Amino acid sequence: MPENRAIMTETSNEPTVLTELAEAIEALERGAVSAPVSIQLANNVVLEAAEDDEIDGLLQRARGLRLIMMIAAGEPVERPSSMRHDRPAVHARVKDILDALK
Image (cartoon, rainbow, N blue to C red; front, side, top):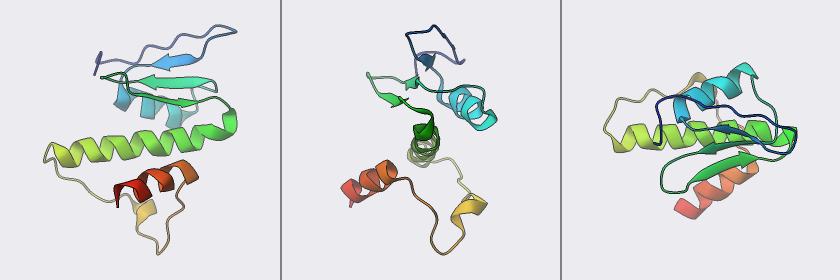
């Protein structure tokens, strides 16, 4: 990851740019940022939401990436309570990603 902190820049024409995954997730959960927003990660990976109605999908993708990284690193992972229901709500873009991994 580029840095260990979230850097937020806001201008009228440019999106808010977050550069650290954990802090970006925290900022999105708090509602501290609005669209357009992007999370810039290593290797030119960018997660973004151009409209406010895409923020929930961005947050879900960021959480999924964090979960994948934790699993890959061998860290213990607990399933979030929201995923314990019979059919969790999955954002359409996340569903596409999961389908591609099959």
